[in-house]
Image (cartoon, rainbow, N blue to C red; front, side):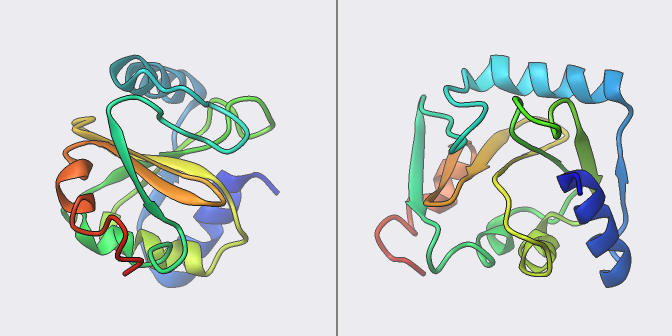
Length: 144
């Protein structure tokens, strides 16, 4: 099952609004985000690698989203497999941890509609750029 379809299913079960965007809109969003944040790894252990900081996945995986402003977010995935060029718009950023806790494991990117931050989640770390670095600095090494 594609990651976007899995997230859409979980959102529906949890009563969280979401929708999978059309391919053209998805491609434009991904390009803008990758260009803005100079993303280094777009597939296989996703990583920003430029002007970013990381916190451990362990202890933060399902709670980090509580630090985000509660707003709609874009979530997208590895760009070299069947999930490429797909973006899902989720209505509540702060419920993303709950969504992921009820989904099968996946690596993904998260940004808001203003592209004021980018977060990359892989099997080992949560990496943030833009305004996400502000709250992440307080979690570095805490394994909160």
